[in-house]
Each structure stands twice: as structure tokens, then as C-alpha cells.
Image (cartoon, rainbow, N blue to C red; front, side, top):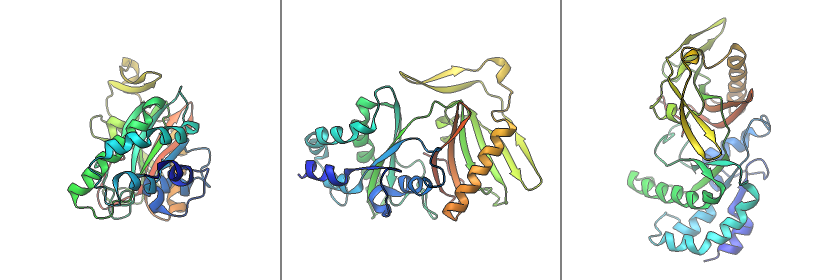
Length: 289
């Protein structure tokens, strides 16, 4: 296997560090963020992608490499060496799929592929392999013929508030921004395990639907932990008027730049808004992964 030579040339693609004009190299999720870098350079957490070329070397063009764990062992050192400059031992990371077929205008395949959160730098290489192995198996099971696949690694944000925002109502198609938000990390919200506040922003006004909250998930040095909210915060809106305005403005900018209604996963940390993912809204309401 040509791991060492291939890694040095095309395995690791820094999002925002390297100009990428080919979506098949890093998949739709990473490519969407790369497209947003020129307009939101300070809003996207540091991230990189393991290219589809490199993963094809391990799994084969159709993701059919039965002995992939042996192959992964052979290339682990080369991969670890290449990703080391992108990692920090004091940070935690999200390891996500970035397939060519997901996060598109027709299909999102939200929730189909595995995501790993709160990953320590020493475990990132292993989680890259776990993510890719799972994805190739699921693509075969789903009958997805285009198996060009990348893995995106993104520095996690210690969010005080996080959620998902839509530039157009994904259910009614009304011309209004819809924001779902929770205190802390939003992973349990997007997979349906946690209720969220909802804010609607439309021409001439806004409205909200608040939910009672009992707990939040926080990012710590040791990983992700669930904590209970003080009673004083359980009925407090998760977003201020200023936060709603900031998110709305950013979502409109993203929709205009990508030239399509969008579904944006965001997080706020120390009053700074971060964009974690962005993709076109598909035919039905979907959650980010």
C-alpha cells in the first residue's frame, strides 16, 4: 500500500488553509464549510478533512476492503504523523462523516452516518477509522452506489448555547428564519433527545416558543458531561434578542452565499457565534449530525 507517499500529497486537507475546488475530495459537509470560509473566516472552528483518495486506498473504491483493520494498522503511523500539526492535546474534537452524497439539496442522509464528539487528540486517528468503517458499511446496506467519502475533524466549541437555524421554515416553507436552541451542546437536541426553545424571525417581527429545561450538556477537558440547570434558569430563554439577531444575520449571509435555503448548526461561546455545519434544506425537516 502507498500510504506514506499518498499521505504527504493528498490525505489531509485543511479547511480554509488549502483551496479546494473538488467536492469529491472532501465530501459535501467539509466542502460547504470551505465555501463559507471567505465570508465567515472567524466563525468556523479549526477543521480538516481526511480525503476520499486516502480512504479509497484503505477501503477500495467501493468501500469493500474486508481487511480494513489490518490496512489501518499499516497506515496508522503515517496518518497520525500527518494529522498531528492540526491537533492540540488540550482540545477535544468532533469526528464526522463527509460523504459526497450527504448534505445536498435533494438528500441529506442526516443521522445515517456515525459522529463522534468529545474526542481526545490521541483518539482522533482511531475515530477516523471507526467513522469511515461505519459509513462504508451503511452505504452498502442502503444501496448507495457513489461511495466517495471523507472524514472531517473539527475542534469542538465549549458552547454556552447551541442549536440549529433554518433560513426558511423547513416545515411550512414560510419565508421566516427558525432557530432551535438549548443551553450547552446541542447534540441531544438534534437527535431528538432534548427539547429546545424555538424562535421565529420574520419581516416586521418575531415570536418564540419556550420549553422548560432541566439539564444541559457541557464540554470539559475530560469530555462531555450532563449537568442540571439551576431552577432560576429553567424557564429562561436560551437566546437574547442580540443573539437572535446575530444568528439571523449569519444564516441569511450563508443562504445568500450558497444560493439556497440552508440548515445551519451553530454554537455560542463567550458571546462569539460559531458555524459548525451548513447545508441546503431538503424536502423534509432534518437534524444536523
